Length: 302
Image (cartoon, rainbow, N blue to C red):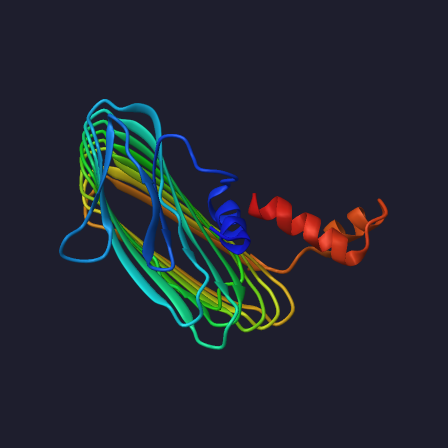
């Protein structure tokens, strides 16, 4: 990899060198490196671009890194990655995409990730998106099936620099399954970002907590759609908190659908500018207005 590709890899996956454990690195539409372990196998699909990640039942304290890097202008890259997490496994999966577009043509990456999480398995999924240059499009789709007693925590972050993104997430949960989603998005300039969540709580005592935090700067626009369907005795919560700056625009549409008498569902949404007293307090400590804004935003997005 060249210096640009290594820099992108560090930003989206916190990797300074080849990771330990299982990994699959994709660069400009081709395989750039792969490693498997005794418990984690990675297999190239034969019918379409993408990979199957197969994690054996009972696997503990292992990780998988599957970053994607685009540094060629005009490249349209689409992959289908399926994750099979065996019963009782407990693993961390780190994904994400970085685009460095130094040309005039649009570069795009669409990743369709499908998770099959076995009984009592636990998954922490971390996904970061980052862009440099002009004409960068990222459209991730995440489909999650969680079996009885399974658990998944998703941390999805759009750091900056993505001109257009549509982020779709769909999930269905069986008895006792849990899903936690923590989304963070920052847009600036004329960027647009749309996120769509649909979670079906089908099982008894299943639960979901969907939280989005975002900052819309300049003339950027964001749309947040979140729908939780309570189809059994369950608990669901969805929340959107957004900070507006300059001429930013945010449309938050949390939605609940209760189809069972014992479904307990809650939604919250808050959109507003940075409070003046917060700025004043930090400025009295010697920060400029810009520095105070950055400190508040950094704390908000943590």
